[in-house]
Amino acid sequence: MTAATAYTCLKEIRFHHCDPAGIVFYPQYFVLFHELIEDWFNDGLNISYSEMIAIHRKGIPTVRLECDFLAPSRLGDVLTMQLNVARLGESSLRVKLSASHLGKKRIAATQTVVLISLETMRPMPLPEDYIFRMTPFVSE
Image (tube, rainbow, N blue to C red; front, side, top):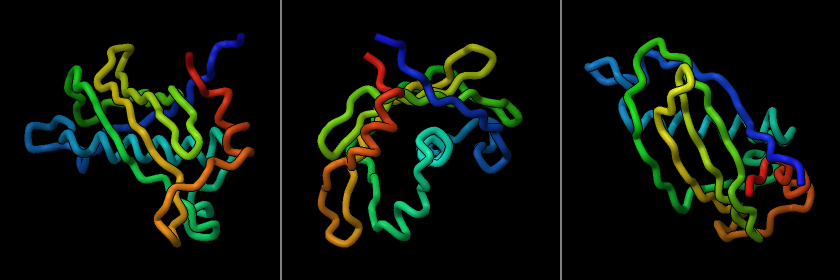
């Protein structure tokens, strides 16, 4: 079995991410993680996130999210954001997300999202081409 590929991108911590103490205000990590998922769809899976929503009328709302805040991130830090798929379900996927700076992990999260129809707001099966594209990112 081959090792899973992690989707990785860099995100600079900007002023709008921070509280008055100059560290990331914790809800901003959730914004960064959502950007990571969008980037993964666009760049890692070659599935247009905007077309998925606007044209195909599919969405991936979060149904579960847990995280460990391990160390603060500061204005100007460049974080290495990483995503692996922990589980592919019939209509859901669980992803492992993390952010590190200079090799030190700042936050680790597990997030479950469900593919839904934006017309009915009901779950729908993951399309075969999504599963095919996501499989290389599945970690055991």
